[in-house]
Amino acid sequence: MAKLLILSSDTGEGHNSAAAALELAASAAGLNVSIRKPLEESGKINRTMGQLYNTLLARRPQHVVRQALSALGADAGQFLETFDETGQ
Image 1 (cartoon, one colour):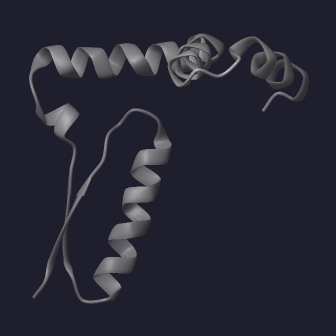
Image 2: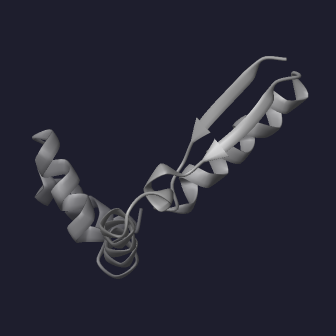
């Protein structure tokens, strides 16, 4: 039987939802599926950083978005103005 390894993380529910959907589809296709969470299964520093990210995402989503857009070279200010207006 073919195997599929899915790597996920508890940093936001989107990762786990996507992993669960992939697992369901792959299992239905006859694959032996395993979901692993390397961040959570690694050392204390990595787990702590993941928890910090989740806290920032929950309490200061604009900060996380601003940093991500800045890293991509995008205009974070313009994006956040639109985000604040639409709530999305």
